[in-house]
Length: 165
Image 1 (cartoon, helix red, strand yellow):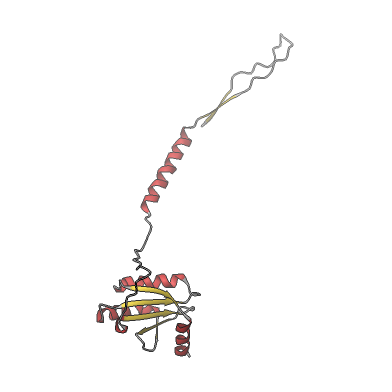
Image 2 (spheres, helix red, strand yellow):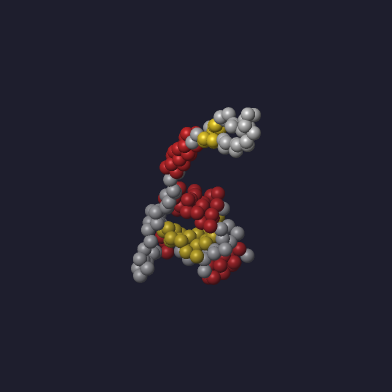
């Protein structure tokens, strides 16, 4: 709160005809409520920042010089086009279209049939980032822990054009 010192002014004396200067009023501001609010905000921000933890995913990257041969029967390839349509194939089979809704059940079935399954996710560079994250979430929910991510090459696009038409 603030207060104003209102002492009686020493303006004009009727007996003396001299004019004296008016005395300046004193202003005193009480800082206690402002300190209370500052500490309240400080404790609020400290409390809310400790409540929200960043969500991260651990990614194990292989060394650049190492190539690991994978059997075609153990490789499931998922290709995601720019428009979000998903195609899958095992090895050198012809890619088939699958809806995102049925992806989790399909992946759980495939990992149940082959526990050594490695999934390769190829996404078009013009595709949306959220699609990749959603598919990686489906991998986690289906129990797939071994997967790789790559960008879609021109040969993959040609293969999908043949299947689409």
